[in-house]
Image 1: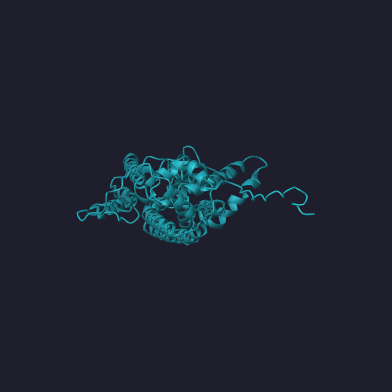
Image 2 (image 1 turned 90 degrees about the vertical axis):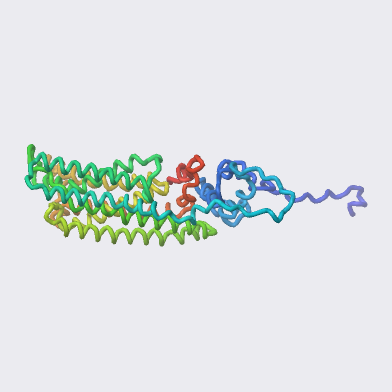
Length: 417
């Protein structure tokens, strides 16, 4: 019996319901409208989306192949906040002329020769003043304790001010973000240990230090090498930043961007390590008479510390100060633990606690402790950088967010994972 014969009609087939909105991008437009209105190009929107956890897999749910194509649609559909309302002209005229002074692309504009020369001179100041301080110390004809102390204090102050100036300008400039103070604190500890830690450890192992005792011996060659290492650090950081932004501009997916940036990071790290070791060798050969109580591992310790400081600064500059502070803090903790173990070994029944440090120092000298601590911490930061510095949020367009007064893309909780 058919449906017509029974007097009842078959119910019409219902269309398959569509899950989700007809325009899935509209939700992102509403959620990230402020970001899209302030963006100067789609790359900035892509960096912001990645900082909020939107990956290529998440972009597929919005019917896009990757984050970059999704950012391009958002950039095209949402008008910019600073974009003037343009009314259609009645038509092209023969008298119309192109804009005589278009705004240049910040990624393609080369710095002026004067500014480039000024930045280079600023990066050279710490090393030059450190060498000048050593020369002034050696040139004192009538050495007295007060005169030598005054010369050393003046040179140390000038070198510290020059270092602060070099870090506040150029590629190593660090914007104030959460965790920046911790980076400065732990960096100061590691540098202080590199200058006086080997002498202190040698005194502790020999039963001292006596109070009053001998004047602390500073590792002058290591201090000079670290001050001179600012120049290759700035050059490698600038090279990595420029080519990282170029890789972001030419990449169409996050995986492609990561494959482009990883060799850049490894190359910049390797080049800086070679330059730092060369500076350390040169400083120890030049200043052999200035005193170095570190032992055979002094050059390796200086190179490892320079590499640790470079990687920490690179992570902090690109928006990951928490990771930088963790790396420097781990090195400082290992160095402090070595000193504490030697002191604890003096207590009754705790003598075996100092055996590892004593064995390491007997084999390679007091400088082996900071060399091992900084090497382990630097390897950890390099592994972290191979993950953190390969994302789009680590390479925003140059100075775009701060020029408009907005929040930097990397200054978000998601960027510090």
